[in-house]
Image (cartoon, rainbow, N blue to C red):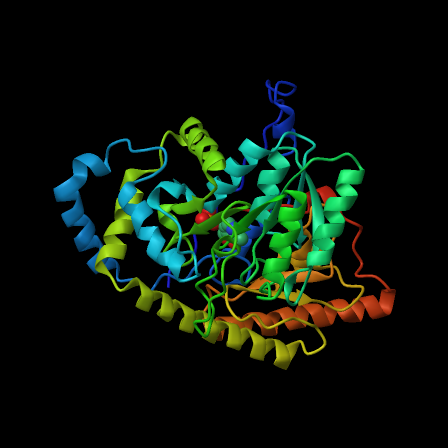
Length: 440
Ligand SMILES: Cc1ncc(COP(=O)(O)O)c(C=O)c1O
């Protein structure tokens, strides 16, 4: 099994002659101090429970390669050419059948915009909606990549609470009222309703219309980010917010987790005015999404039983989630977590007084890696949690990883009991950010 390639540690630049010339937004982009640690964490001897990478070894690469060969012979001149800023019409037609699985039935190819991954979609929507100082409401904890985008546009992220049934509608309404009282412009609510990254929870079906009603009442746009919706372990899907409201929701989905992230292809559905602006922003940013990637995806969708392949993924991730849950019960019964019903992640609460961020170097020394909870907040919260990914390692490796983690946590607890602290100085909360490109 191939291990992920570690990203090179950035060279430290001393005496940068351009210091002082950067835009204010570049100042908010900071390399994580634990990036170097993640290069170590990617070594084969370390069990990485850190990254959100799908496991691709079951993909029929040989058959895919033969079909891509054929596609290149027949359409190479178009595949290697510039394309439309809105994306390939064939792919925009193909994604309609995927969205139908989550009750979105009223969309036409013209309503769809193809992007370079959902990450690019988040960038585009923030670019067209937000000025510096505007407010985005977002679940806490929150997807680290979205926080990075919001930060780079100098947006104020205001937390909305989550529980085991997903985003709490009352917390959403209170946040809108409070921010408006403060004279702030609330530009949108960002939510990951299904199998949340990192919290693992899913928005209950009862809450969905309530959240839409609040959005309608206060005229707040909802950004529904849904890369994991088809990865429910028992095959269950949930009605998308977009399926109940075509005016106040921008819907994002991606091929990254259901097929593969290397193509960097995702899509958005937006109301007409917003869509027009998104296409212009896409054009300004990348001219067009890559035809080669889009044609590869359509070749795959048109020739393979992709529903069956997603079923296979679901079964595999279910087994891995079960393995992690069982290992946690065996080795860390005094921690707490909600067992997810789909997706990639368990959000683990560690005993009071421990600090997941401070503990990380010691975990990596013990050859296990995770993402500290602080990475999923803007304000340094989250030390009492960590995100454990079960998507990439095999069940055996997961078991071993949790065993190693338990030795670290046990030692840490012993130190805390002896000295009343985990023995590390308080860290700068501004460093609690994107822990490197392996972490999605
Ligand atoms: C919630 C969420 N949104 C967006 C993304 C980005 O996905 P993509 O690979 O399509 O850019 C991820 C990746 O992990 C994610 O977890």
